[in-house]
Image 1 (cartoon, protein in one colour):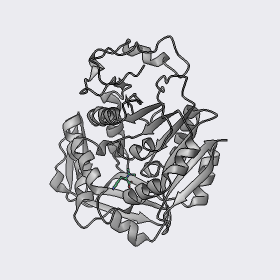
Image 2: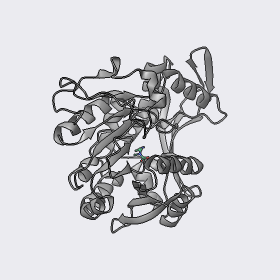
Image 3: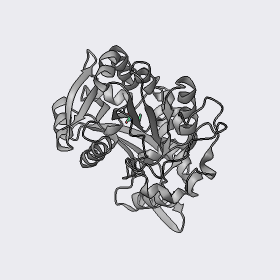
Length: 359
Ligand code: AVJ
């Protein structure tokens, strides 16, 4: 029976179908604790696995206490940040989204063939859940869709839209921070295989050693027969990269600065947005874009009881975005127990979509 109906969303978080603490023993194989079938009035059951507000606060405090200050890039995506990101994706200079989407559309039949029938799709960082539609439109009898995102409101909204558009699909949204190990939701055992979906080259936001650990966790989650469909941005002319992260309309700058507004509202800090400037540069040696916010004056910022001193010109690192060679990424995947089964690129080799399988 489907747990999802196409009626309007009801956030059932405040009255979960099972005790919240049971999440620690909910696993792939746990049948006994599966949530009872949803009553007809319940549209979507949202499973929440944290993170606790305090975990994020600690991460912010630790990042600002470092000699080279940093903020975690997952904090870009409050409501305004998510809207700005969606806008970035439509910019001429930001080739990533349209290139990845075109690759997926052009090869959708082959991709769906490789994934096979009755799969459970687990999307890491589902955001507005738009790219998954390309898959859902081509897959044979997809079994379930498990979007994972930190932003609860957007998750509920997009999961509801997917459930309405694909009434035969089980939609099981999970609010979690996938950069940290988390307990996977219990997925009915009758899915033929578990396939993770990680588009957008968000893998680039991990440092290289973190990326390997992340891929290994994905490999564990999907199991022996599982797969991972992943978008990986490629090394290219630094000029193109620079333009993609320094768009002429200034949307990326707004997106970058908005992280400070988000930290202010969420944690009560007192960043002055007009005292910082956006900077993005490509480090060719390290093969990565770095986004910074540069302090425009000597200033103090307070968070809880701690005051952080910033000098004029001092950067806060807000994001890294690694660009890969195909060989380099294949090696990384191998180290994580995944082999490249097939990959697709555009004619200019700007971007790649890769289907990895457990080795
Ligand atoms: C889609 C999260 C990978 O690094 O290109 C866009 C985010 N940052 N412009 C990226 C982003 C600046 C983006 N990710």
